[in-house]
Image 1 (cartoon, helix red, strand yellow):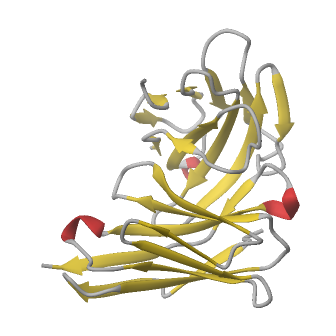
Image 2: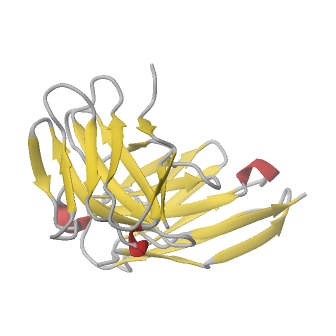
Length: 111
Length: 115
């Protein structure tokens, strides 16, 4: 069954603007990860946030985690055309090694 | 350090034939995962293997599908008697020894088309 669900399903913004994507999940987790997938390619790991962390930064990426609401957000600042991709959140399923992925947000950056 | 290698990149099969998808994990990685992705959808977990062991195959159909990760050589996902519904992108991922759920490295996938 699907553990995570991203929102919105699709997002189009102008280059230079910030993009925010949200992820909701169902069960308790020990970490949550975000991945990017360019069209026709495999997924690339972006960032991991642990359950005892509330916010994490990596370059232009900022991730927040609210375990009480079972939700996370990914913020991409100063977007670039190269950020056009699908973004997925992933969580371990019931604490085991199996990572389950959400349905993704398709982000389009308009030059 | 080569990444996760999958081959073939594209595979065309007729209904009833067998499809064999190969995955060589990154050097030093001992965990291998297989996922299936339909167009415009997320990835669906199929199976998780370590060398010579299937750890979790809860996402794999009970019939026609099998997976292995032998002591030597790549991991193989085998689909017997393929049907049109098997058409999808199949991704392999690997992770190093240690906590297996902290970072996966993905291959570029095999696009299976069943005619």
